[in-house]
Each structure stands twice: as C-alpha cells, then as structure tokens.
Length: 300
Image (cartoon, rainbow, N blue to C red; front, side, top):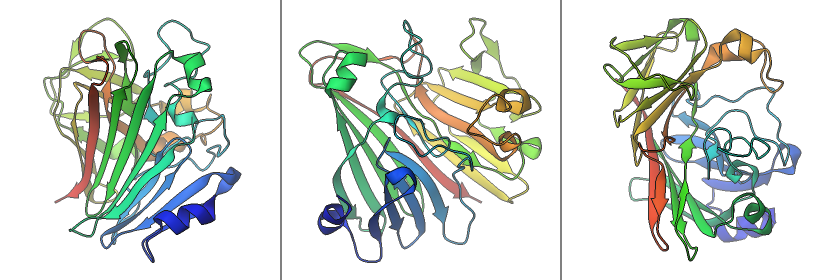
C-alpha cells in the first residue's frame, strides 16, 4: 500500500508516504514554507511547523496510535456528531470519522508553492451501523505559509440528514498559565453542554481553571497570545457559528490515560464547530454539501 501511494501521489522531496507507529499510514509534507504530517487514519493532521518556528500543533506524548482508538492531539475531524452521540452514549465520542481509514483523492502543489492534499471517506457497513446515511466527506489540507483545513460533507443519500462536526484543533503553547485568547469579547457561550447562556465581557480570555466553552452565534477570528513562545496564532473559520474553547485543567487531565498529568499546561483547543440545534446544526438535502474550514497562521 505504501509503495502504491508513493507511486501515485508522492512529490520528490515534498510529499512522502510511510508506515508509522501502530502501522498507521503517515503522510509527510515539506512545502517551501512549512512542514506537516498527516495520518490517513482519521484524516488527522498531526503537525504543522512554519519555517523557523516550533510546531503550531500539539500532540500528546502518550497518544495511542492504534486502530479503533482516537489519536490524542493534532486536528481530529469530528463527524457526524460532535461530543457524545445525542441519544446513544455507547457510540463513539465525536463520531466515527476520526476512527476510520481515509482514502487519498489528490495531492498537488499550488502556484504559491503550498501543498494541497485531499482525503475522502464514504459510508461503509461499519458506518451504516452507527449512522444510517450515505455520504461523502472530503478533507482538504493546504500547507504553506498558512494552514487551511476544510471538511466538506455531501449528502449522497435519497433522504435528508442532519449532522454536527468540528475541526478539533490542539494548539501547541508554552504555558496555559500565561496564555490569553482574543476575539470573543461580548460573545455568548455555554459551559460545556450546559443550558445557561453567559456572556464574556472581557477582551481576553485567560485560563486559570478547566475551561470548556461553546461560544454561539460567532464567526470571529480568534488570536492566541503566547508570551512564552513570543508569537500570536490567528485562528479563522467559515461554515460555523460555534467556537469551542477547551483546556481540561489538572483534575480532568488526571483521568485521561493518553495524556501526561501536566499535558494540559502545553495546549489549548480553539476550534470551529457546528454543534447546537437551532444555531448551526447542518441539514442537507440529497445532493447538497456543506464546508467547515479553519485558517491558521502566525501573525505579527
């Protein structure tokens, strides 16, 4: 399989497939401006390193690279539901897309010397047991001076369906204690999946405890201010009215076997999602498509 993928899609010195931990197929990318790594299992971006910088993306050093288990870190693709299944808690958290092998549809180089990769996932016997619809999901990664990730879902069923999704991005940071997040002033949010709507009045969000917020009716770009790494990360989005901000804090991290006890100190999640009925749950008629995307870049 690796040889076949390299024969069809490799670009000398820029794109290479290999077998990684747990025999998962990995894609290494080296553009003129940055490097990246993607797992075909889950279509999950694991690394994005702009030239001369530390990785923008965080990965747990205890992550399980094992089929049937989620990879902790990177940018997991949550689909066709975000969080626990709304009616059956026995189904996998955040859907099944991050637990499936995706197929390579396209690899190419753009005019600005970025590398573009498209991966696809369609219904299978296993997916139909969890979610009774035909679909085509396409994940596109554009790796260059910036990182763009898109998830496009097309309804190939004969009937309409609803779904929720997220680009569950883990950002690599120096220390959560000195981090600030800009862009959500006056936005309304729920804590986790609570029912009490609150408002953030401050211009900056700081993290001094476990934080799990779902900001609703916002399309704003967020900026991560990281004093320790002396950088700002801009997190833009489209196709979403919900922004999820998460850091598990010390107590919750202690319950997670795939994360070191102090793992929470070096990442924050700030991500676009479609996650709330009446806000932005996606409804598709047969043949219709919807795209959720994020644009990640370092700014001055």
